[in-house]
Image (cartoon, rainbow, N blue to C red; front, side, top):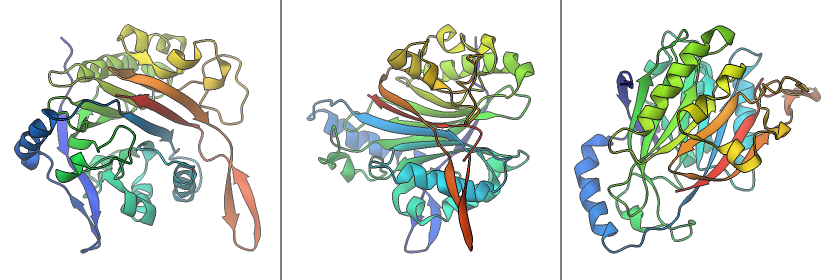
Length: 324
C-alpha cells in the first residue's frame, strides 16, 4: 500500500485592498455551507465542459538576478493575449516570493498559496507556489452562478490546500490545491505542483515520488487532476514513470513520443540525447487540448545602457490547456 506522506494543511490567500495585506481565507471552515449551496445548484444546472489553462515554470533559483528574472517571467506569462488560469512556479526563493506578493498584477488578479507566512520556505533553498486567477476561481458562493462570459460558465471554488511530504534527498514536497467545478458539489479535482528530486543519483526517489503522487490523485473523494512541474526526467529510467503509474502525459498525447520540440531544459542548447523534456504535465480524468513550450530569451533593462538578453531560466515554461 502506498502512503501519501504527511499533509501540511495551508490556505489560499487573497489581497485585502481595505487593509493592504494578504489575508488567508478559511477554506475548510466554510465547507459545510459551500456544499449545501452547491448541492442546490447542481440539481438545476446541466454539467458543462470547462476549459482551463496552466503555465508551469521552473524559474531557476541559482542563476544571477533571480528577482528581476522572476518579474520578467511573470510579465511574459501575463502579457500574452490571454493570461493563464493557473500558474505553477518552482524554485521560488524567499526573495522571489516577497516580490511576487508585492506585485500589483498578482495582488489584483490572483489567489496565491503561501502568502500569509513563509513556513514552507524554511530550511530549504526554494519552494513551489501556485497562483489561481480570480477570473476563474472564487471563494464567493454567489459567484458560482455567475461567469456567463467564461467558457462553460461559472467559476471554480478552491476547497483546500496542502503539501504532501515526499521521500526526498532535497526535502521536496507536492503542493496540492483541490478545486470544485461550477455547479458540481460532489466532484473534486486536484492541482499538484511538483519539483521532483534532481540529478542522476535520485531516480529511486523520483520513482517513489511519482507513485505517491499518482496515489494522491486516486484518493477517495478525488476525481482526478493534473500533476505538473519539473519532473527532473534526466535519465532513460524516468521515461516510463508516467505510464507506469497509469497517467496521461499531455505532450505525448498531443504530439507523440518522437516529437523533438518538447525539450524544456538547456535553453538554447541543441540536445542529441533526447533527455531534455524535464518539465511535464501528467493528468488523470482530464483531457489535454493544447500544449506548447515557451522558449526564447528575455531582455533585462540596464540604466543608461542597452538592454541585455539573457535566458530567463535554465528551463523553458510549459503552457497546457485541458478540459474537465
